[in-house]
Image (cartoon, rainbow over all chains, first blue to last red; front, side, top):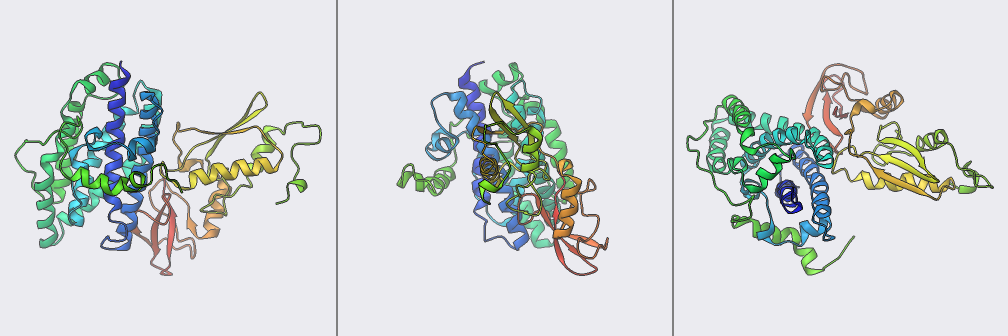
Length: 252
Length: 165
């Protein structure tokens, strides 16, 4: 297996958690009630913690002396390998939780596969992360059900969020050469293989939320390969990275 | 504490036993829940010598918990105060931390402090203040990554519940 492919794979894992962690941090101090504010901040904290482990390992595999901080703060948009889903704007609270659920439902399945990885450090990071992610999934799933099966207003907003975000949910199941190499070396599960369990899980929650899954299977692509990110990523990075860009090497 | 008043490395430099080190670590408080020690919390996974280097293996509670680096610093500071000089704090990710590793002593101290200890059923057994079983969840998350917010419907007090993971 090439270190280049493994590096790309680790960036994908770490960039997903980094970008989603950054996105939901935007709610800090703005959520509808304080309990939800705390929940989002805690989820963000878990995701940023996981990012440190993934990007730390990525830097070691790359062998160029880049730390997790270097990778997070000093790369530009075209070098990011996160799913388009996680860079989408927060929208309203319901849209944020819908995005979270669509991500968590995959994240938990992926980590369950990675716990079996032939790479011991990847297995250890996944074993640590999955406990946190199960908790995220429980909460995001419950909230999607509560809001979907809530008032007329909350139901309409959740359906709109689902219609908006569903075309971003399929990107993660499209495999490329990096995925093939990971599967071949028993590093990671086959992305497409996770799809049936994912759909079962999503249909179950959305059914209880009285929401209708869009029929189209069209999916936007380009985030995980880095080929074409949405315009939102650059704006996020300008917020997230500006301190290191303006004052290189600053610490506190 | 004054280093000179602590028992530790003696005049001829004999290294303390592993049991001594465990006992000292059991006096290092968790920075966020200071009534329990880092040993009570179950995050110290090993104490062993590699030659004359003392290696303390520590596992994080939550991957993003900001207390993790403070804990490593506090452990090192406590051991240096005992005269140990060659120390390494090693991060151990696997097996992942579980609240099953909380000591019984630690669980009892949590209740005294007003925090309901973790239960496999997923919620507190009783209100840590009035012991009523009539409790409800306010939020799945709380003031630190390891806690959730609950409320007692009998005495009406909100309280922290130590999440079971």
